[in-house]
Image (cartoon, rainbow, N blue to C red; front, side, top):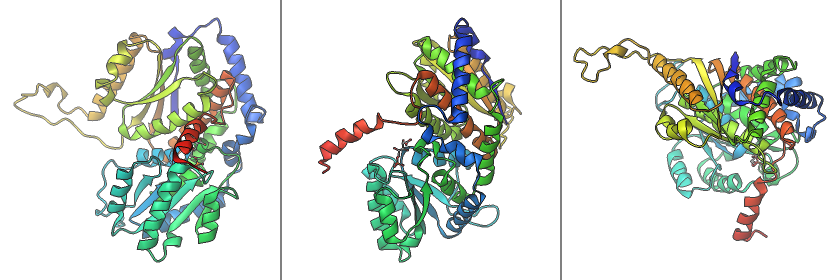
Length: 431
Ligand code: PA5
């Protein structure tokens, strides 16, 4: 379950424009439902939920089990939408620390899911390959276009390493890519890799609930059916206009954007939710940041960042909106122990769960930031599990589509991403 509270933006939005913005947001919502808005050929992220392919989910779960049983490491090679979603879900659901040698509760050894091809650091790749030495490795190379430079170069290096280490190398590599187009599809056919297809109508940043995100998540041991059907449930809940939190979120963000606010911070109080924030950054940044418009999305992990960015948020330039993403229940409880000496002066906290202290930090921060002139909103998930994360994924995907239409941009393309590639290819002398 997710609870939404947008009242912390009330003092900041211009109520005179309210009805007009709500009317336009409802029309945008209808355009998403009916597939009549700009970029409607990219609405596959809704289609897959509307017509669930249970056989595909089953197939992915089975391959995930095979990988978990046979590999020490699954290396996912991809960038942008081809890695942020799986990284977000795996990070949110995994323990913070897990020794690769320590068996899990059921006696099996935990699979480590690692990522590559999401930047161009040679030190990272060198250290990664050294870390993989002597381990049983599977690779999932993921690229919708099959031509993105970062994962393509990383994969060439990793493939050569795999070929020199494993006789059954081609069985250990799974490619997730376009059905027909791109160099990766050709290579996969040539080598006989197992493959999954990314449909033409699903954009990279909307692809976490396709094989792009689902295979790594399944291999990591998580329930992809709950994740997927959480999103299905949310889609059903967001049909109506009245009381629709996706419309409400989009309306408030847009109204504040029109008043000159430039930046939306997503603040989390649980570091394992920072990956969800990174996924959200791409979803909103690439969908809305066009034609000189859009809020700049930025994640803050609190209370860590309260000791670095807190000053600015509290009292810097008043151009920030803050959206808190918090979980009601934590999976672990630590109590502050008694200390007869009380030399640290903390006895007033003896017996208090750390979770309550974190909650006080959250509530105190939101109060302080509101008083400091920051419009705030709260998204509270009852607990961090597959179903709620699935719900959250759909909520944001729907909301950003409405948000893009309100801004008058196509939320499903990303022409600006090409600019740096052109310059880089010129420097590299690409033929
Ligand atoms: O949202 C998008 O489409 C992009 O950000 C892509 O996810 C990213 O550029 C990676 O592209 P590809 O999967 O084609 O390698």
